[in-house]
Image 1 (cartoon, rainbow, N blue to C red):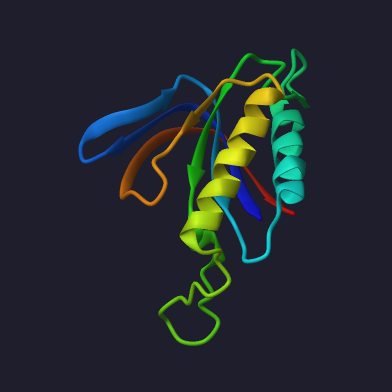
Image 2: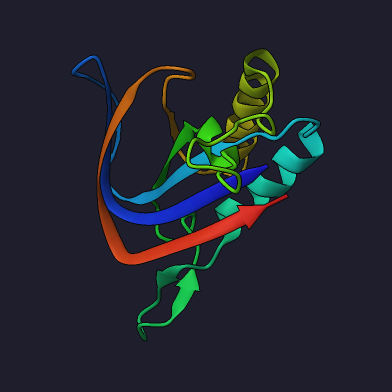
Length: 145
């Protein structure tokens, strides 16, 4: 599994011009599932995301988690995180998990995020999503399990 975690001031996700999910501030997480991934990796990623200390404390030091600051998470499935463009210019997605299994792990990991006490909003699995976000920092962390 891979997750691209971005600290944001605001994010809106739309499908077909209609807003589906929105968070006022917190984390936008782009999430990819690799063939063979399991719930164990989902639990690891969820715990890591909710406890990442990437928000500034009163001294300006990144020392607070999304839970500490009362933020939300917009959790977006993105199979293209497993795009391999090492041979030629057209990415291959053979490492990405098949959609049915990937969606099950996406939903499972989203549930785990919520169990750690952070409000979670979702994208629409497999849809053509338009995402507008106001990055904060910018702060971007790459996680892999």
